[in-house]
Length: 509
Image 1 (tube, rainbow, N blue to C red):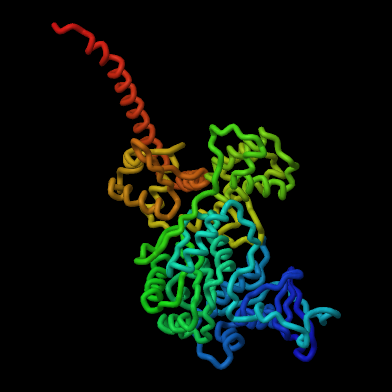
Image 2: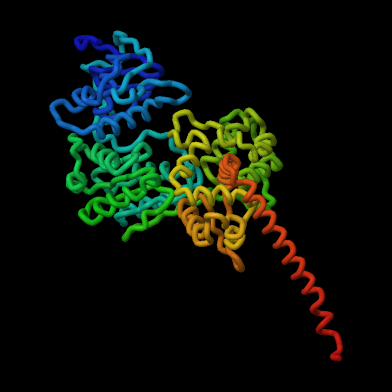
């Protein structure tokens, strides 16, 4: 137990916890976790090794208030995320089934050295406020200047704006940047929904962000609190609880006139009044472009790759041939910023040529990126796991089967190869529509026939899932049969085209 009459701190891992002046630091950087999560952390650390029940944690964080368990779950998920609990094998707070939570890392109490934060020194109230507005993130986006300007204008003029794009496209980063840049609002509440599992925890998360202390949070009370000021409510990572979020958003929109909502999701809510801000891939040069290194670096995807490659230890500058190889890699990665960053970060260790060769290897799915990135962005696999787990079983089955196509394919091809057994054509068509809506499958309108295509990483991921099932041989047989029929049909067409002029020229009998 620490002595409250002396200034000091707990040291654990890379963190320094100052209970009396209510500051948590990672190295020299302050960590904004909010006062409720801070109180829970202090309680756990000072009784390290002991299991604290939810009721005990409530008495620390909400003294004198009657609150529900969901508040503890929301705050604990937030706390664990902010201190990177579970990253790289580091464990700080563990959940003990049926009992509560326990701080398991060694924490040492130290007297505060000269110059350290004290109770008499200045305290950054932003760091201990219940209303921490925006997450601290290393933001250096490339090629999104136009999107950012459009988004800032949209959120000031429109009441519901949803940033929609594939996983790793940079939706959260863009939302944070737009929220930081806008001057149209008196209050901004940022709610990360990645740890939300249902409607109850969703409402609790929004309520906590709005500064509502009691966990007996009713939707009308949340609406009333948000309506006190011209407010921007940012709901990040909505896709896995899209239906629950849509219900809450629709209610807020109907009951208020001063609350604007900015959401990020891999699919749209499809609500009345919703403005969709589509966030596509970064622009990449065409395969036919013969660009110099200087001109290639004007393309955002190439620029991002080269920046991250140099940071990873790759010696520069690059010549025309190397930048051409980078452009080819960016095309294969469909200009996806997260995929580009993860692959580029390995060029220092593997070299540019070897990295290009490894793109077809499932190993790439597990390459780790920034250790402080959200869990869903640590690897391509974790990013795709989130999307895949949110699909209905039929949609999952169709996605697995579509990995058999090596390039673009038509809807007719998909119906022929994927259908059969327990999947009717209507099921396949509906699943394809869902996959397009969720940004897992790309639709490309054509002059003759529209085509569909999986991104390189999604195809590799889906193929791995297909290999884990007993469906692969069946799908392969149907694909071979389809290709044989297609070749036969094209041969017949070519033969008819060759014979037709002879028939026209022949004299009548």
